[in-house]
Length: 145
Image (cartoon, rainbow, N blue to C red; front, side):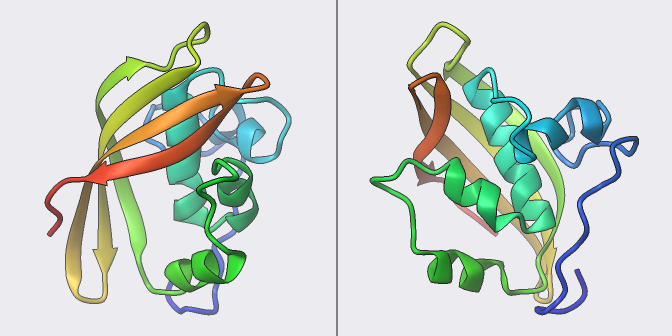
């Protein structure tokens, strides 16, 4: 991601998944981004959304956003059109969001490199499950630097 016009290619299925879980992309977030399977938990959807930000997969981000909260494509395109390079995701805590829940939250810390330097995004995201699919609803952001 060296310029605003470049879109990184998705990782190969045999490479490590950007979400940091430690699995390979083809067994982790890849099938979720390709719509081959649904995220089983709110945390799995959070990890797939982080991966989508890292590889600028606008389609997955829009699909996984709750329709009542989803931004316009143009707004999302604009927010991804910078030189931010996502480096690491740490899941700090989860509440509910399991395979038998309909709501859940995931607190995370995402580390990125921007043209201005290091960026930390600390957030608690809220998810709901509708018709068997987890959807991102909203976030409460903590201090960022």
